[in-house]
Image 1: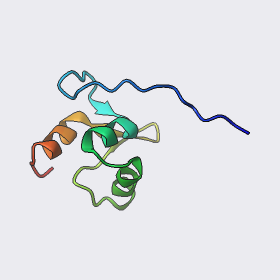
Image 2: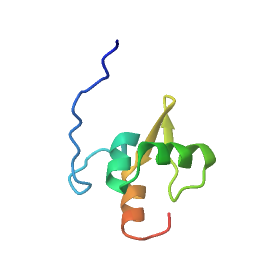
Image 3: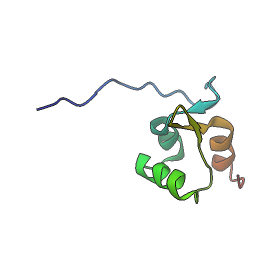
Length: 74
């Protein structure tokens, strides 16, 4: 039986965040959505924000997340 990766993730508030983009797990936390929802947004390109792809991985721009949370349409 394999063990799952249980490395804790430290999530900063968006005001303290210094990175330009976040991985899906952290973006989902800030948007109060499941990771699967963000994956669907990326695949169908129908969500309020779209991710960048960096080396084949999804990266969600902090500025876009802030816009969605403030009620602006991205």
